[in-house]
Image 1 (cartoon, rainbow, N blue to C red):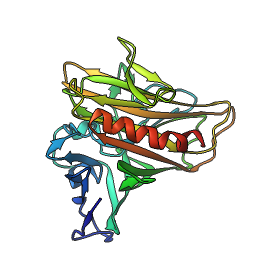
Image 2: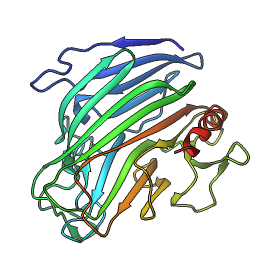
Image 3: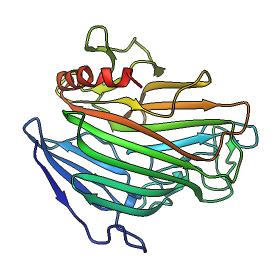
Length: 303
């Protein structure tokens, strides 16, 4: 695999760095481009393999990105306290993100960013009839990521490390890390799970919407293109921690989604600080992805 670097103006500068960065490689014989943009505060909004696009990128939620949902003063409702890498719901289709990109670098084949995440809901906003808990546009939560082509010797996998820094401004007893989510065009209509006992990607049960314990991928119906995720490492699990892999289809919006989520619960306040994870994002054909999962699954089992 050949990898080329593109060093862009303003990398790691003190004032408003550009978020427009690329990694280029030849993966399984095809030219491959990974791209971040200023519009999404350095979140990945394009992955092209042989000219085929894997990321939907529409508003500021449909990228390859990370987010966190947390309780607030003992209450938890989805999206009501939800720092998000690429920006806010209110950013809509606009050219700017409410998230604050603090640094971006491409060096020796690794793309790294640091972003202070915006809350998904603007102050005064609501989700599913529940008002936003946040009173600010931008949170104190910082997301750092490092991404490169090739993971533990697997060519068609992104080595994707992500770390959430949770500030001490509020006590939390529940943290729901959307470690990584990938929004994909609607033609990726087939949801698959990796069956480690068979070493194969198999269809998820009909009507499955939500999480299962097995790693997930989404594929075109002909199997020509697919992308999925495997969690390789994270904070040491305990009896009150849980991870799951989700697949979702949104017909009206014409978009598909996978994610890997890790939940942490505690009877006492969870200490502020960093929570770090490492994932493999596999891509290619359905069989390319199955081979990648087979090669990487033993590493995940050793967590």
